Image (cartoon, rainbow, N blue to C red):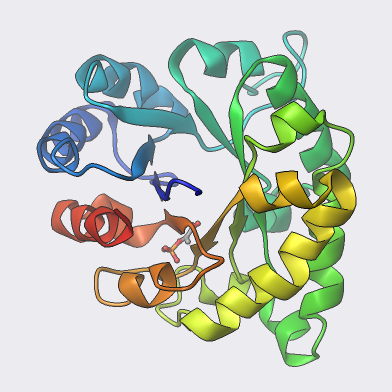
Length: 251
Ligand code: PEP
Protein backbone atom coordinates (compact mmCIF):
# COMPACT_ATOMS: atom_id res chain seq x y z
CA UNK A 1 0.00 0.00 0.00
CA UNK A 2 1.37 3.40 -0.98
CA UNK A 3 0.20 6.27 1.22
CA UNK A 4 -1.16 9.09 -0.95
CA UNK A 5 0.65 12.42 -0.89
CA UNK A 6 -0.28 15.93 -1.94
CA UNK A 7 2.36 18.62 -2.23
CA UNK A 8 1.75 22.31 -2.85
CA UNK A 9 4.41 24.04 -4.94
CA UNK A 10 3.97 27.73 -4.25
CA UNK A 11 6.67 28.66 -6.78
CA UNK A 12 7.80 32.32 -6.48
CA UNK A 13 4.65 33.47 -4.68
CA UNK A 14 3.94 34.94 -1.23
CA UNK A 15 6.07 37.15 0.98
CA UNK A 16 6.90 36.06 4.52
CA UNK A 17 3.90 37.97 5.91
CA UNK A 18 1.60 36.47 3.29
CA UNK A 19 3.00 33.01 3.98
CA UNK A 20 2.23 33.34 7.70
CA UNK A 21 -1.37 34.20 6.91
CA UNK A 22 -1.85 31.46 4.30
CA UNK A 23 -0.09 28.70 6.25
CA UNK A 24 -2.03 29.49 9.41
CA UNK A 25 -5.41 29.40 7.65
CA UNK A 26 -4.54 26.42 5.48
CA UNK A 27 -3.24 24.35 8.37
CA UNK A 28 -6.56 24.70 10.20
CA UNK A 29 -8.21 22.77 7.38
CA UNK A 30 -5.37 20.43 6.43
CA UNK A 31 -4.73 19.16 9.95
CA UNK A 32 -8.23 17.67 10.02
CA UNK A 33 -7.55 15.54 6.92
CA UNK A 34 -6.00 12.12 7.63
CA UNK A 35 -4.81 9.27 5.44
CA UNK A 36 -2.72 11.47 3.16
CA UNK A 37 0.77 12.96 3.51
CA UNK A 38 0.54 16.74 3.18
CA UNK A 39 3.48 18.87 2.08
CA UNK A 40 3.76 22.63 1.58
CA UNK A 41 6.63 24.08 -0.46
CA UNK A 42 6.77 27.86 -0.01
CA UNK A 43 9.78 29.91 -1.21
CA UNK A 44 13.05 29.55 0.75
CA UNK A 45 12.57 32.95 2.42
CA UNK A 46 9.32 31.79 4.01
CA UNK A 47 10.36 28.33 5.21
CA UNK A 48 11.34 29.49 8.68
CA UNK A 49 8.04 31.27 9.30
CA UNK A 50 6.07 28.33 7.93
CA UNK A 51 8.06 25.87 10.02
CA UNK A 52 7.16 27.65 13.26
CA UNK A 53 3.47 27.60 12.36
CA UNK A 54 3.40 23.95 11.29
CA UNK A 55 5.06 22.44 14.34
CA UNK A 56 2.99 19.51 15.58
CA UNK A 57 0.46 19.89 12.74
CA UNK A 58 1.39 16.73 10.83
CA UNK A 59 1.94 18.91 7.74
CA UNK A 60 5.46 18.76 6.31
CA UNK A 61 7.59 21.32 4.58
CA UNK A 62 9.47 20.97 1.32
CA UNK A 63 11.94 23.17 -0.53
CA UNK A 64 11.44 23.88 -4.23
CA UNK A 65 15.07 23.27 -5.16
CA UNK A 66 18.57 23.03 -3.69
CA UNK A 67 22.22 22.87 -4.72
CA UNK A 68 24.00 19.52 -4.51
CA UNK A 69 27.03 20.76 -2.55
CA UNK A 70 26.95 21.00 1.23
CA UNK A 71 28.58 24.45 1.30
CA UNK A 72 30.98 26.68 -0.56
CA UNK A 73 31.37 29.44 -3.12
CA UNK A 74 28.03 29.14 -4.90
CA UNK A 75 26.56 32.65 -4.64
CA UNK A 76 22.79 32.70 -4.44
CA UNK A 77 22.40 28.97 -3.85
CA UNK A 78 20.90 27.03 -0.92
CA UNK A 79 22.59 23.85 0.29
CA UNK A 80 21.02 20.51 1.26
CA UNK A 81 22.31 20.97 4.82
CA UNK A 82 20.36 24.26 5.02
CA UNK A 83 17.23 22.73 3.55
CA UNK A 84 17.46 19.84 5.99
CA UNK A 85 17.24 22.21 8.97
CA UNK A 86 13.64 23.06 8.07
CA UNK A 87 12.35 20.58 5.51
CA UNK A 88 11.68 16.91 5.13
CA UNK A 89 11.10 17.09 1.36
CA UNK A 90 12.73 18.76 -1.61
CA UNK A 91 11.39 19.17 -5.16
CA UNK A 92 14.07 18.33 -7.74
CA UNK A 93 14.09 18.88 -11.50
CA UNK A 94 10.83 20.79 -11.77
CA UNK A 95 10.21 21.59 -15.44
CA UNK A 96 10.63 25.31 -14.72
CA UNK A 97 14.11 24.57 -13.34
CA UNK A 98 14.85 22.43 -16.39
CA UNK A 99 13.52 25.05 -18.85
CA UNK A 100 14.72 28.34 -17.31
CA UNK A 101 17.79 27.33 -15.30
CA UNK A 102 19.34 24.69 -17.52
CA UNK A 103 18.88 21.72 -15.20
CA UNK A 104 19.74 18.50 -16.98
CA UNK A 105 19.06 14.93 -15.88
CA UNK A 106 22.68 14.79 -14.75
CA UNK A 107 22.27 17.83 -12.48
CA UNK A 108 19.00 16.45 -11.10
CA UNK A 109 20.80 13.18 -10.38
CA UNK A 110 23.60 14.97 -8.50
CA UNK A 111 20.96 16.69 -6.37
CA UNK A 112 19.20 13.38 -5.78
CA UNK A 113 22.41 11.75 -4.53
CA UNK A 114 22.88 14.74 -2.26
CA UNK A 115 19.32 14.34 -0.95
CA UNK A 116 20.26 10.77 -0.02
CA UNK A 117 23.34 12.01 1.85
CA UNK A 118 21.32 14.60 3.75
CA UNK A 119 18.34 12.35 4.42
CA UNK A 120 15.87 14.49 2.46
CA UNK A 121 12.89 12.93 0.66
CA UNK A 122 13.04 14.05 -2.97
CA UNK A 123 10.09 14.74 -5.23
CA UNK A 124 11.66 14.26 -8.66
CA UNK A 125 9.75 15.80 -11.58
CA UNK A 126 9.63 14.32 -15.06
CA UNK A 127 7.42 15.14 -18.03
CA UNK A 128 7.40 15.87 -21.73
CA UNK A 129 6.92 19.24 -23.44
CA UNK A 130 4.02 19.96 -25.79
CA UNK A 131 6.28 19.55 -28.80
CA UNK A 132 7.52 16.18 -27.55
CA UNK A 133 3.96 15.10 -26.76
CA UNK A 134 2.72 16.08 -30.21
CA UNK A 135 5.57 14.27 -31.92
CA UNK A 136 4.88 11.09 -29.92
CA UNK A 137 8.14 11.28 -27.98
CA UNK A 138 6.62 10.98 -24.49
CA UNK A 139 7.97 7.45 -23.92
CA UNK A 140 11.51 8.28 -25.02
CA UNK A 141 11.69 11.53 -23.00
CA UNK A 142 10.02 10.41 -19.78
CA UNK A 143 11.84 7.10 -19.72
CA UNK A 144 15.24 8.82 -20.15
CA UNK A 145 14.40 11.47 -17.53
CA UNK A 146 13.42 8.76 -15.05
CA UNK A 147 16.36 6.44 -15.58
CA UNK A 148 19.00 9.19 -15.81
CA UNK A 149 17.72 11.37 -12.96
CA UNK A 150 17.20 8.51 -10.49
CA UNK A 151 20.30 6.37 -10.95
CA UNK A 152 23.09 5.54 -8.49
CA UNK A 153 21.13 5.62 -5.22
CA UNK A 154 20.75 2.80 -2.71
CA UNK A 155 17.67 0.55 -2.88
CA UNK A 156 16.70 1.61 0.67
CA UNK A 157 16.71 5.28 -0.31
CA UNK A 158 15.08 4.58 -3.67
CA UNK A 159 11.88 3.36 -2.03
CA UNK A 160 11.53 6.78 -0.37
CA UNK A 161 11.82 8.73 -3.62
CA UNK A 162 8.66 10.34 -4.93
CA UNK A 163 8.31 10.85 -8.67
CA UNK A 164 5.99 13.52 -10.06
CA UNK A 165 4.80 13.00 -13.62
CA UNK A 166 4.12 16.51 -14.85
CA UNK A 167 3.48 16.92 -18.57
CA UNK A 168 4.90 20.39 -19.23
CA UNK A 169 1.96 21.28 -21.47
CA UNK A 170 -0.37 20.82 -18.50
CA UNK A 171 1.53 22.96 -15.98
CA UNK A 172 -0.14 26.27 -15.26
CA UNK A 173 -2.14 26.09 -18.48
CA UNK A 174 -5.50 24.95 -17.15
CA UNK A 175 -5.26 22.04 -19.61
CA UNK A 176 -4.80 19.03 -17.37
CA UNK A 177 -4.08 15.60 -18.82
CA UNK A 178 -6.75 13.02 -18.07
CA UNK A 179 -6.70 10.16 -15.59
CA UNK A 180 -6.39 7.35 -18.11
CA UNK A 181 -3.63 8.95 -20.15
CA UNK A 182 -1.61 10.03 -17.10
CA UNK A 183 -2.01 6.59 -15.51
CA UNK A 184 -0.77 4.94 -18.70
CA UNK A 185 2.42 7.03 -18.64
CA UNK A 186 3.07 6.04 -15.04
CA UNK A 187 2.23 2.35 -15.57
CA UNK A 188 3.86 1.81 -18.96
CA UNK A 189 6.81 4.22 -18.89
CA UNK A 190 7.75 5.40 -15.39
CA UNK A 191 7.29 2.19 -13.40
CA UNK A 192 9.11 0.03 -15.97
CA UNK A 193 12.05 2.49 -15.84
CA UNK A 194 11.99 2.30 -12.03
CA UNK A 195 11.85 -1.51 -12.22
CA UNK A 196 14.92 -1.55 -14.42
CA UNK A 197 16.77 0.67 -11.94
CA UNK A 198 15.70 -0.84 -8.63
CA UNK A 199 13.80 -4.09 -9.24
CA UNK A 200 10.10 -4.67 -9.12
CA UNK A 201 9.50 -4.61 -5.35
CA UNK A 202 11.13 -1.19 -4.89
CA UNK A 203 9.51 0.16 -8.07
CA UNK A 204 6.10 -0.80 -6.71
CA UNK A 205 6.84 0.97 -3.41
CA UNK A 206 7.79 4.30 -5.03
CA UNK A 207 4.99 6.84 -5.00
CA UNK A 208 4.23 8.55 -8.29
CA UNK A 209 2.24 11.77 -8.32
CA UNK A 210 0.49 13.52 -11.19
CA UNK A 211 0.99 17.27 -11.62
CA UNK A 212 -0.40 19.76 -14.13
CA UNK A 213 -3.48 21.93 -13.58
CA UNK A 214 -4.87 19.76 -10.78
CA UNK A 215 -7.91 21.39 -9.18
CA UNK A 216 -10.59 20.39 -6.70
CA UNK A 217 -12.82 19.46 -9.65
CA UNK A 218 -10.46 17.11 -11.51
CA UNK A 219 -8.41 15.67 -8.60
CA UNK A 220 -10.62 12.62 -8.03
CA UNK A 221 -10.23 11.56 -11.66
CA UNK A 222 -6.45 11.27 -11.17
CA UNK A 223 -6.57 9.79 -7.68
CA UNK A 224 -8.99 7.10 -8.85
CA UNK A 225 -6.24 5.67 -11.08
CA UNK A 226 -4.33 2.66 -9.70
CA UNK A 227 -0.84 3.99 -10.47
CA UNK A 228 -1.30 7.60 -9.36
CA UNK A 229 -0.55 8.17 -5.68
CA UNK A 230 -1.35 11.85 -5.26
CA UNK A 231 -0.53 15.21 -6.80
CA UNK A 232 2.02 17.95 -7.06
CA UNK A 233 -0.13 21.07 -7.19
CA UNK A 234 0.91 24.55 -8.29
CA UNK A 235 -1.73 27.25 -8.72
CA UNK A 236 -4.46 25.52 -6.71
CA UNK A 237 -2.13 25.08 -3.72
CA UNK A 238 -2.35 28.83 -3.08
CA UNK A 239 -6.10 28.59 -2.52
CA UNK A 240 -7.09 27.26 0.87
CA UNK A 241 -10.38 25.58 -0.02
CA UNK A 242 -9.07 24.18 -3.30
CA UNK A 243 -5.96 22.62 -1.79
CA UNK A 244 -7.89 21.22 1.17
CA UNK A 245 -10.42 19.67 -1.22
CA UNK A 246 -7.58 18.12 -3.25
CA UNK A 247 -6.06 16.67 -0.07
CA UNK A 248 -9.46 15.29 0.93
CA UNK A 249 -9.89 13.66 -2.48
CA UNK A 250 -6.49 11.98 -2.10
CA UNK A 251 -7.13 10.75 1.45
C1 PEP B 1 3.58 22.61 -10.75
O1 PEP B 1 4.09 23.71 -10.72
O2 PEP B 1 4.23 21.62 -10.41
C2 PEP B 1 2.21 22.49 -11.21
C3 PEP B 1 1.71 21.31 -11.39
O3 PEP B 1 1.52 23.67 -11.45
P1 PEP B 1 -0.05 23.82 -11.76
O4 PEP B 1 -0.78 22.96 -10.77
O5 PEP B 1 -0.33 25.28 -11.56
O6 PEP B 1 -0.25 23.36 -13.15
